[in-house]
Image 1 (cartoon, rainbow, N blue to C red):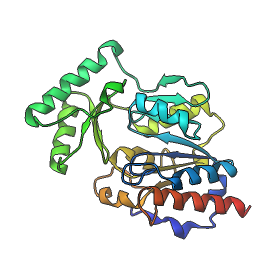
Image 2: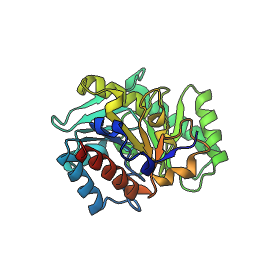
Image 3: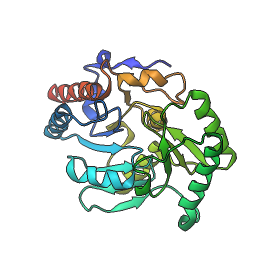
Length: 261
């Protein structure tokens, strides 16, 4: 089903119940790959209305632990549901079920090298050395047909594959953003319900966050429209503006709804 325009939902009562924004990062909180003053102002506005933010990203544990330290968020899920990093304690907790953890990265590298036999120009992402639960390489000029072949090849090896606007990920089956988010909420924020969370994203690795069986209120920033035909689940709502402009659009809607209480 096609997403509904976010602007058309202004004034609907469910926005007043939102207590947490669980959001992707690249392409959702950024503009041309960078944070902007508009993002920091949006975070400040959410804080003034007692709405927390949790980042749910495919970026590496190493990078995300630094981001959590500097941004006003309650924590972050890194590596597409692989682990949770807590803001207050700085502790990280593995969320995905990984058999034989000591050999896990070696297995991921072996599968990556198998993919590289067909695509010799594949290059590990710059943050790949700082990962714990998955293996990433740059998406560059890969076509949808290339990505579909990689997904099928990883599945044949009983592994999983996904991609975002910037990276491709090899990971264990069941390592998904929504599954990781649900685990983190149960462990860290048991008072949160699915209807008190809005999820936000922009690309295929956010598809599980758009699954209404997990979270009924999901928002895609406008650039998600490039992927609507390949998403397993599409967002419930879509913004007019792309990237961080779309995130700001959502923040304005949430805070105005809260002001109307």
